[in-house]
Image (cartoon, rainbow, N blue to C red):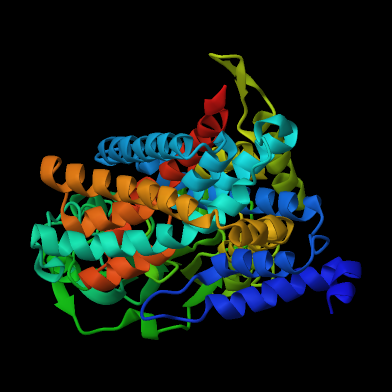
Length: 541
């Protein structure tokens, strides 16, 4: 079997991936390794024979796919987090991560181990694969920094406590601070908006808004509802921004259940007539947005009422439904409800795309250009004191460029973003390739370390990194910054960039509040760890 795998690296790759995913789904209570199990399975296969190692190109290719797609999906959230409380929260996370890097470096020096080991311990203690990837990329260009050490071995030894330690920190924080997470008082501005479901109703326009344009009436209602159909006498038409209401008009409103009664009272009186049931002149259809020409543009620029006599009344994005406004920008994969004349319905459907197949495809040109730009920026060296040159490398360059392009969305006719399904698939594939590659290439060294009995000091050093990060975030965040613990444990999960910790935090709080903190700090924490891991690696200089 070993001989077969040694001669057939593709078989080795897919076997490691399959076994890794199987192991990752095994749960101990609420904990499972998830995709990280691929790394440990790779280490196990690599430990069987020195030659059971996947080619270097496998993990390099996987690394670039993973960090770039991660950046594209996290870009909007990353820059949005810099507003409001984002700067404060990310400053706390930066302090905590920097403190853990210092502790990891000092402990590793006390053990007499080189900086390459310290960098692996840091990456494992904060459970961050891109940080490890940046270290490996630097060592590939400057192998003299390794000094015989393998950071992947250190990462693998520190990683398990990195996951378990943050889960334990959440449980301990609940008890020490005496907080009932399920009943913790939370400021309404912090709480995430519940998933919104939209309804419709018909209102008869009263004298108060007669003579107003639809856009003015919507503005008076803070955009909480939108208008779909208008019936004036026997004539049925769509409502555009320029429609002028007359007393007695019947108008269909679309909005959240909580907003419709207020809007109805402001506009006139309720009507029992259901305009949406009359499909002789106007029809409605759910349409997938797959045409790249219409995305990342405000609806006002698409001029759908002028071109097709159509309006979009609902935008379904993920599990949420949005009330569209003139400023709403469609994204690939949105499912919109269109109201249009029957003879224009096929035309508007084609204009928006409505191709599920297209949502699983990628634009190879823009995708490749984005990665190429990231690799080019990652190769730029920045001189640091002590004769050290810092580079973002293949891990940091594509991530930073992905964050920027994910926020920009499009440049003229060029669309940088990916459909959600395509992004998720590529990201998962990239992570599996990376973990399988580094696991098999480091398995022999990992087994040698265990046989020689040098594992426990590294495990303890990794624990010191994990504990430091958790202690700083929880103590300063709760005691000094007065951040609600339900949000703070999400920030802690984001600081560790650990999805398993986020799932555990949400389960403990019985709410989605931890996800608010996680989304605020996760992108910044990832970038910070990539940079700090390289500084730790250069700390011997």
